[in-house]
Image (cartoon, rainbow, N blue to C red; front, side, top):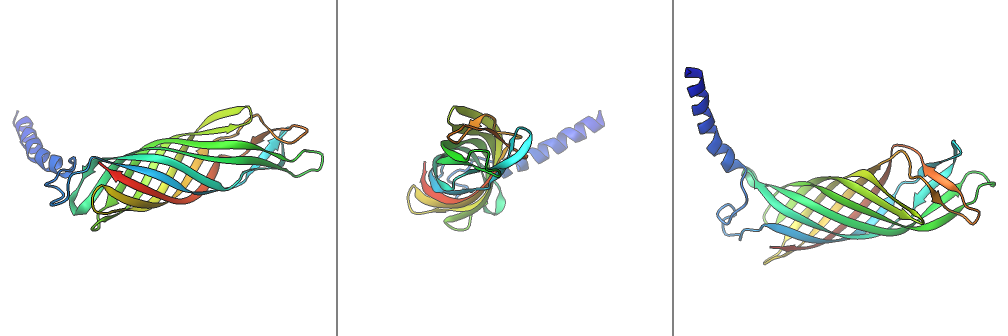
Length: 223
C-alpha cells in the first residue's frame, strides 16, 4: 500500500512538468507574438529523378527515367507542441504533383525506345521539428504516405517517405516564406504495365525504390 501511495505522489509531481513541456502554443508562450494555430504553405520547386533499371522478360533491358521537371503543391502545418529553448513541433499534411514524362531507354536495338506523359503525386502526413531563432525557424521533416504514378493506362499507388531540411521565415503579420530541400523515396519492386514506344513494350522498374531530389519553397499564410 505504501508503494502505491509513493508512486501516486511521484506521478502527481511529474505530471505538471510534463504538461508544461508539451503544450499547444499560446500568446503567453510566445511573449508578444500572437498565437498561431497553423501555416498554409503554397509550394513550388524543381525535382530530379534517378533513373531505374528495367526488367523485360526477366532480363535487364534498359532503364526507365522520369524527366526532371518542376512540381507544385500545398502543405498545412499544424502547431502541436512547444518545448523549452524555442523548440517547436508541427504536424504536416502534404500534397504535391509533378507533370512530366516517363522514358524507356533500351539497351538493345530490338526493343523500342519511347516515352509517355506521366504525373507523379505525393500524398503525405508527418511532422516537422524546428527551433525558433527570431523570426526564422530552421527545421527537419519526415512524412509518410503514398506516391501515385499515372502513365498511359497505368494508375498505381506505392508506399513512400519524404525527408526534408529547410527554414521558415515569418514576416510581420500573417505572411512568410519557406525554403526546403527534400529526398522523396518511393518503395516498390516494380511499376508494372507501362507501355512505351511505337511498337509497344511492357516494362517494369526493377530495384527497391524510386528516388528523387528536389529544391523548392513556398509562401506561408499563418492563422
